[in-house]
Length: 341
Ligand code: SF4
Ligand code: SF4
Image (tube, rainbow, N blue to C red; front, side, top):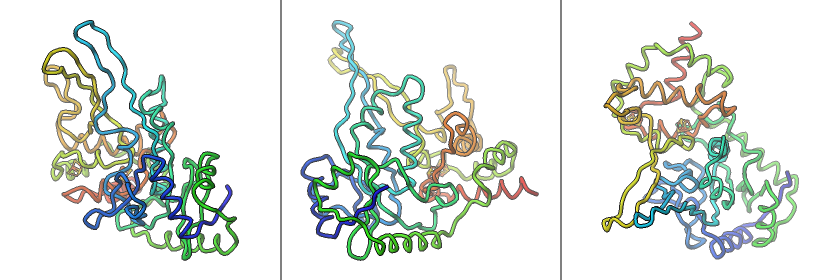
């Protein structure tokens, strides 16, 4: 993968070019917290070294999305695909891996037209990061991104080392900045940062990730589920902040004049009480302990075979967000410890 160097001036001109030409979503600070939002001026973009609370999945898989519009007068319906050309900038390696997993999910079988079209028209730009006290991507094999992006920026003292992932990315970089070839000192600086990153993790999973499906398979009756289930609010926040949770509900509504109907989807979450409730009122996972066990198993076991990968990228968002302090690494490490004893 080719490496380029862009100085700070070149970086500003690159961002300016993106703002002028594209719908740009990037990271900025809001009340001191890093968030993704629409960037309207180059100054608004603040590349954050720590993760955003909400993941960038909403730009590819919106929380609410219109899928079909029906006329109730003539019975005709039309699909709705709203897929603007857009750039996502400030994606950390874990986010890039998470998007790779969503790509597999939404292109599985017949494929999800809305997601696929939006993804096709989305340029992904990664940036390097540093872990906070919840990150554990180094345990999940997602600390580095070697593919899955168009461009990837590593901040250096005097500018940025830029890795190019696609021809589309290269064209973009050359159009809006004047990149030079990266030299040995730039690569050295990038490696030093990576070593610092590796040393900064305070959380780990105490088993190889290949072992985790088996650990979870043997932990179905483990007391941890009752324990964390008794604290959990069933609020769904962990599902909603997770970059790889993709469950949704389909709903219909009718306009007040009864002329048109809409079918849309909204995010759903397996920790919410109604998620597994079916007609007649039966709930397959009535207790919060059952719902949490289901969620954790989805991340580390159930989806592993179907999509050839674990569905946790170690971003720590669920633990960071949980009001009652349920931490995915603590739970997993307890299961690992007891599986080995
Ligand atoms: S964020 Fe915490 S309290 Fe809310 S559903 Fe998830 S585990 Fe339960
Ligand atoms: S399960 Fe938690 S740590 Fe894993 S990807 Fe989802 S939010 Fe991140």
